[in-house]
Amino acid sequence: MRHGSRHPRGLSFSDLGLSPSLVRVLDERGYRTPTPVQTGAIPAVLAGRNVWAQAQTGSGKTAAFALPILQLLQEHPRESPRRTRALILAPTRELAVQIGESFRRYGQQLWHAVRVVTAYGGVSINPQMIALRGGADIVVATPGRLLDLVDHNALRLNAVSTLVLDEADRLFDLGFAEELGRILALLPAKRQNLLFSATYPEAVKTLADRLLHDPVRVEVATTELTAPDIRERAIEVDVPRRTQLLRHLIQTEGWSRVLVFVATKYATEHVAEKLRKVGLKAGALHGELSQGARTQALADFKEGKLTVLLATDLAARGLDIAELPVVVNFDLPRSTVDYTHRIGRTGRAGAQGMAVSFVSASTYAHFRLIEKRHEREVPREQVAGFEPVEIEPPAPPGAPPGAPAGGGVKGKRKSKKDKLREAAAQAAQASPPDTRSPAPGPRLPSAAPASGAAPLPAGYRWHRAQPGARWRG
Ligand code: AMP
View 1 (spheres, rainbow, N blue to C red):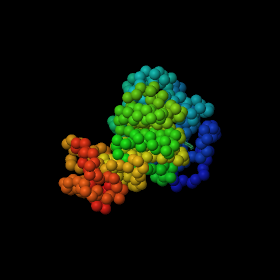
View 2: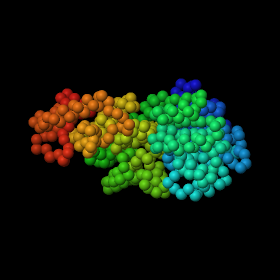
View 3: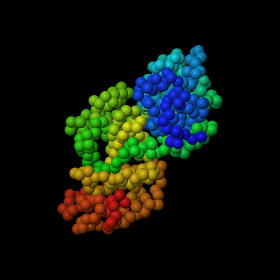
């Protein structure tokens, strides 16, 4: 049974079977129409079915499982002492916190009060143990900390009747496979399983096959997840000019709030500092900040005290920032799954969003792979005054000839086409650079070195365009 994009439109939350008290809360929050993932999942969860939903952040997936779970808990009021009946596993603390807050918000007017406890690592375990003392109907947790709590006898999982794996692909991405196995072994065999994932790598498929007996599949057409809500752009720019380009875009395009992804914690601080020096309100968010500092940076960003938030993938996982019009890939994500998650931060719940990727000579091939994996082509742009100068950085030491400096897509083996491209690049390198007549690549009029150009740094070489070929191969 499949739901989602083919499900009849125009249904209301009450049509899906939600109780008046839940519908009232949604109404107060301005939720009038269920999103496709909600239309598909809510009736199925209420009917006690297993659900396998393709849903990314921004699709309304949290409410898709939180609302029916709250209702099921109302229909079967708790026993005394309170036992944990719903367990939600999330890959990161930010996501866990947001899910916990959603449960509390949606559940605030319910007849039988529900207790929600959120648990995640990186902070002292004691307050979480104390919070669990009176029992909790719903526990939202990251896998490692959940096991620590079980080991401390702070909670028991033998009464869990509904299990949710949220962002299942990232649970595996972050290496939680073993913890998941241990947790599953602690749960009662008879239970309802709900799996939400933006992508379906092999590990997720295997888990779904194992866990989900006769599931209701909820699929949302890719077009509903991305286009037309998220406009993707790729801007060609040289690595050293990205910060200036970012500033230029913020100012000329009037970006009011922008989340910028960079590769390292150092870069978050460094770029934020440079932007502050030119008068922009910029902050950094990375995994080594204290929980307090992260919460503060996020709050400042949400309240508009910061225009730009520089973040690493890890720190930004699962962030729910309503009204985030622009996301920038200052550094490209290493994995294609991360690309999906990054751009999913914008264009939420029907709002328009924009995802801008900076592409330079050294990351061009990597971006092509991301496009290939997502089966789409993002038009390349250049911004006046920031046109790239075409140089290719040296391959890292020990890398095979022609290997991209920025590393390939994680787990991606070279395709025949990639190998051919490398061979062509090597052949081009074998002949001396043609300084007399710059190779006229259609998009790179200023790319080849003019005579008298400044010498290249050691290890760099001009990347010669093939006659008639485009720089992007
Ligand atoms: P999620 O995909 O669960 O992270 O939700 C994305 C955002 O959409 C959150 O800010 C939700 O509060 C909001 N949202 C969820 N469902 C709806 C709905 N049916 N109508 C309007 N906004 C919604």
